[in-house]
Length: 337
Ligand code: EPU
Image (cartoon, rainbow, N blue to C red; front, top):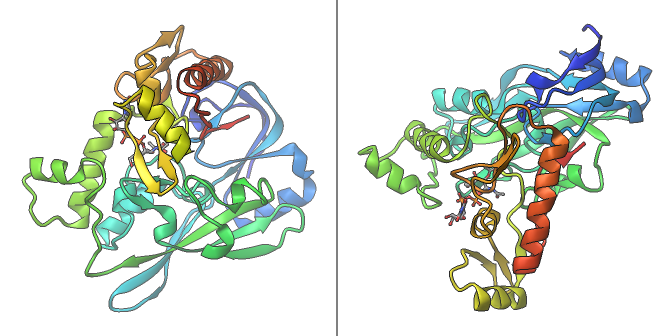
């Protein structure tokens, strides 16, 4: 555990912004984590996970704690299911691949999502009809004030669409150290109906897919649509898909009958933010090095030397245009710091 000053975070945030942290420390075990929390005021600490859901708008006058706890272990297993626990610093995609290699089913649709295991519950990551909460059992977290370890059940996490208790009542109060999942060892339940998974599997000439083949299809779809942060800085979906009520939906479709939507309930409709932004003419827009991705308007990109402030300016411009054009408020999915 070594503390460095003026540490560049360029390789630690997927937008690739070259901002510096006043102090930086990577923690490899819970004991060191508790020690550092004991010595430092909570409001002087910024906790960094995989860096895939943050927009850094300037240098950080904090001690950045990089949660680097590693390890995957089977807690329990029966003939049909396995309870598996991964430490917070494990890379999410590598963990999913590990499970697939063992033929543990459930997380395959969540392949290639950037970030780490420990930050995945905070926003209840989701893709192609599956959300983290579907396979979640519990997570362990350290209280930043009392240093006590608490185990959160699924109910206590209060998961919602890209949402959990860790983004609301308990924001910045706990550091998640591990997450436990229940996965299947046989009779895997495949989720093939969302998006173009079935179509992709047909293109791959797969009739009876294994979880490995489903993961391959998901990876192909994501690679076609979403830019690889290693090549082009981004943080995946920048905005949440807004949910509007029936009245607002009727007003929208009266003006724009071509609008895309998913009906959630009698009075709730989810409108793809990507469609709104694309339809408003922003797809492929670029100012200096800050832009809207060419193939997916939901993703803002850094072409090289954009700053967080420039991306934020672009995001605000998009937000106000969407509000004026469609009377819909877009909410950012990324955390602005
Ligand atoms: N669309 C456009 N133009 C665009 C982008 C999208 O017209 O530039 C339309 C599409 O044609 C489609 C609809 O919008 O009809 C939805 O688009 P898509 O399925 O590509 O994405 P999404 O449903 O908006 C969500 C998640 C993604 C996740 C995909 C697949 C959110 C905010 N995003 O996107 O999550 O991968 O579904 O399940 O819920 C992420 O969170 O970082 C992320 C990539």
